Length: 418
Image (cartoon, rainbow, N blue to C red; front, top):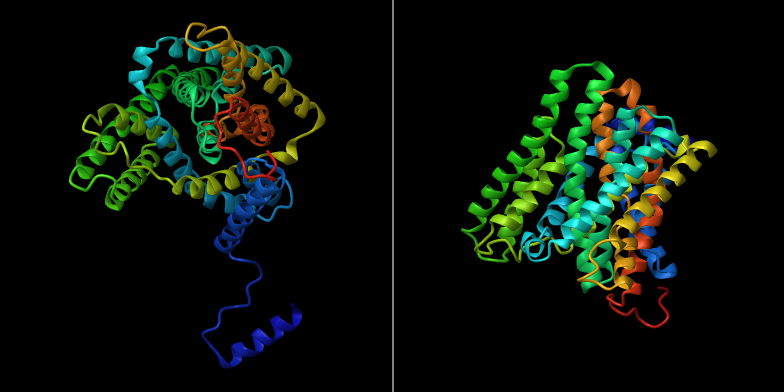
């Protein structure tokens, strides 16, 4: 490198337009190389060991992040976070579009299953965080709200990766969408609880949750209406409709960031509103087929890099594992105890396993709270972040196992590991 540096500096005497010799790789170039590395690692693990591609994406990000080799510093990650916001938002848009309210009306036990598994998970995690970890009531509630939801992006992408179709797949997707919606409501309420506990400011404790919920619903509904109005003038299923869907989703992300409303809530509400209001099926058959995996690479590489692996000590690791076990048992029990009349016990067990992935939104929910109380929330939210770190690797495999065990995945070519 010294020879290259001297040659470059010698050329600068003659070529005045040359910039100074670059001391390090440009952050954008480094991020692009990391995305390619994530893709290659994901494909290699999928082909060689039958692991979900998502595991490879997270692994590449985790190794490159500040918690491991440090190739991506926190400043670069802060620059990449808006891109990850957009990726998560667009995936949650698709999750919201899977929220079939007609099916819920015809089969009310689904809502009961979602309420049972989400409620048990919230209570179990709250008690564990308050009693075993000794967090305050407010931060115990925040931990429970952040980790109670399943991972809609993981479930959606795992189903697509394995071309899964059937009762277990559909039930897993729908329960994930419902408990994701419930967790957003609980998260908004917990914002008020944290305000009241940390600052005693009851005005903010009451108004902030209303701002988040009303803002998320309002932005989602308005953008859904705009997308339907513009798309109705285009040919169904055309590239123009896909462009409109993505452009309006990006508009929703920008407006949400302007008004300090969580992006994930706005995009989920936009997706649900599109599903509910699209009576003429304007966008019913318009989606992001290959775009899902582009978004997944960006999202999971960035979230992997954001994981605080350098803080994973023995005590905190055991506590994070305990939280995962409590959460997993609660969600499994909630599914097993409900839906007896419309799904056999064997398939309910598989659904209980399939909804185990911990949502990537946990990291972004934690970021929302950290921006409000950075002096407290960094340590208080370390437990759910480390639990998310562990489940980023185990969750996709659990979901894949459930779908394959149900016999709803496409058979793999001979010789390919399952």
